[in-house]
Image (cartoon, rainbow, N blue to C red; front, top):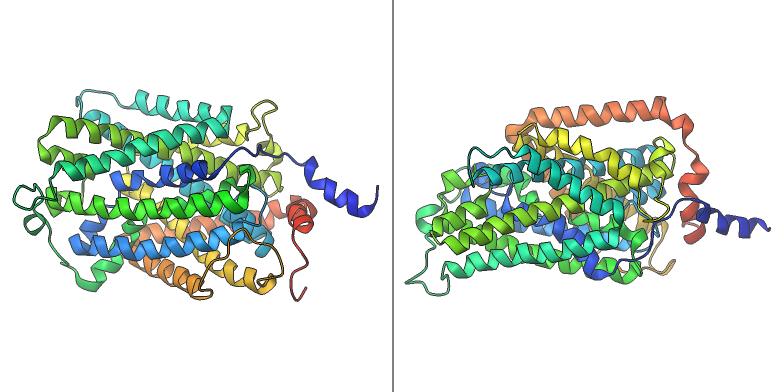
Length: 464
């Protein structure tokens, strides 16, 4: 066999996942993970920046995520493997950065999954304070772990259905308020909202929880290897998903701010459900109870999919022990990675510290976003337009990448107000992890395995 043929055949010897996903599944993965952020978590922005600070944060952070989706989709559309931002980092930044990005992705989604478990538990207690939520939380996570174990196509098909149903309940609540008839409307924005009590500083502080409206949409790139057509599924699924979330986020703020006093809204565990309770309509309460439960389930389901793909990819590329790179012989899923991350999510879920869990998830995500902005500059420098075929081209470069980096830095700065200890602890954690990788794990890394797929599919970069 010639050297060229051997190189082309080499990637096939590595474990690979089944190509079964289309745009609908990518939409379900992205929106399914994120939609829970409209049912809980975002409202802590009201406590930080007031009612107007929360909606301003929603729109500004919406710009951050629009830029992020554009950047991720352009780079991700040419990477034919799982891992998303991790896969981008290993080709553009090297092993140490790739290890950190992979770890950040895993913790972003594992922490988000833990937050979902916390909300499910609290929601079930509204039925009867005597209910023990722990068994239901365990069963829910185990069910979706099993679903992911059996196959990604069924997993994301289920996610599409339950995500769509949860999204519909937001509109049920909106129309139940009769917002279209001012004289009969239940919404009382003037009485319930508190404006900008902390001024500009409050808006910046609110950015942290404004992220919760959209956190996880970038996970669409993690399933690239399983798309039938990367150039079609990723752009369509991700960009339509982003539009869906922007609409849903604005409606969520509008309805909750008009039905729930800002003091209570800023600390609620399930703001949309509290808004439904304020209508005193049993059928609306039932619909939002179901919607909140379904959104948590969809998010947990998608988080299992994304976190396991990142862990699987790191293992397949030898950055962590190779035991987690195994693909199920029948279902073609990274089953060991899926099973390994389940107890970790449960442990964080049972701490009961919702805002702390959310904060670490957001912190990990923001670090990834900063690196994504930098990678966009490097990608365009190494592979200018015309040098390789892209499934999608991000418009307005370099403005898109600059906007992404600027807003991510501003959001990190906003986290200082109230969560500076979390920031220090997060930086310390990733520093220790980097130290372990550089001085222990790096000697086990097979660099040829790490870059083999890109060497086959990408042209020689400019200047190298």
